[in-house]
Image (cartoon, rainbow, N blue to C red):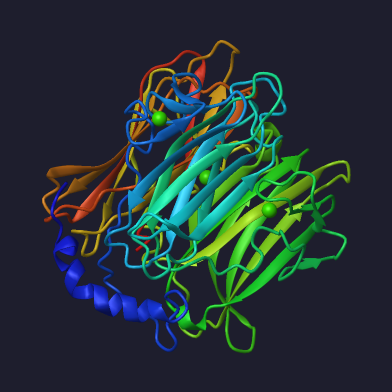
Length: 499
Ligand SMILES: [Ca+2]
Ligand SMILES: [Ca+2]
Ligand SMILES: [Ca+2]
């Protein structure tokens, strides 16, 4: 592990950070901090992709499998029946910051009843006693299936004083038939602030949310991604929440949600900045999901974005979901909305290929202008001969800092026997002369992407190691091998600092 500038300073800065966070979990009372937070910032999970034969994980009725791998060459396979997989990890240097938590789940089994899944982070003191729960997600038993992979995103609360380590644990309930749940790509990394959304998981009905008209977006309990509640609409309409962010003015925000659509439904999502009189004074984010994307997904699809920084004078952020549901036989459902302050906006230029390949460099990549892209009107596609795509991103004061990387990958086949090849996604550190000085992250999306649909989007996410001394830029690079009748598309690329 490289010694970073930040790690040298941990002991020096810890008292300040703790006093900042002592009042309500890092919410400053007056001015927002302009932190150079000196926090252990990379992925805290050891062997996050189960590539080391489970050496760092405890398995009960689980094993390492090579079928339907999400990332790398191996996955944790839970079941049949009751199973648990967990790891205890040190939180040294986390300084009571909350944690961003992500993982992917899928089932290779045709069973529609693979058992329930809980995913939790438990705070442990130095005697290894549980002293609190950071997050506990419940996934209903018919949610994880062989239709589509689901990438989950959530944020814990702040570890209480005295927290020394954390237990990250997945627990699967009894299903029927050959019930299996695969887990892969686990990310647990410090984030600047907790989630600010009220009732973002819709477990308390529509508390905190404003549907318009009020027949749109009703509370529902039959199709949840997480927990036992979500919202669903069979009509055109909007769903809005206003979030006071006066104390976080000029900060960007991580924004995430998951959406399920049946039929030719589309969704537009905006974040607007409002002043003290509730007048809109700017836009932080606008994304659109075209009407062929969700029906081919066959399950919830999650999105992860970073807003522009809130503009001066912003007191409130307004989240606005606008659903287009042209036929009441169709529906659109939402669950698991997150909105949390982070340190930078999205550092990728033209992240969604809405301006073609402007800012990107590519070899054998085609622009895909279809109405089933992940976001907007276009994606970048790499086909049968393979290809590569990259962008160099300027970084400010990078040494010692870590960055969140995420993207949607679309697996499109024109033949049931198609292979997709392998997509490598790398973050490479560059010095000011563009010499390559280190590898920050490498994610491997494999060809073994068994799903029932001919086109499906799968979100990938990872957190880099700390950038080494001399880092001035990062190259965000995608490379795909050749394949037969299978294409992998790229859309909605994110690279930003969480802490
Ligand atoms: Ca793996
Ligand atoms: Ca829910
Ligand atoms: Ca796009």
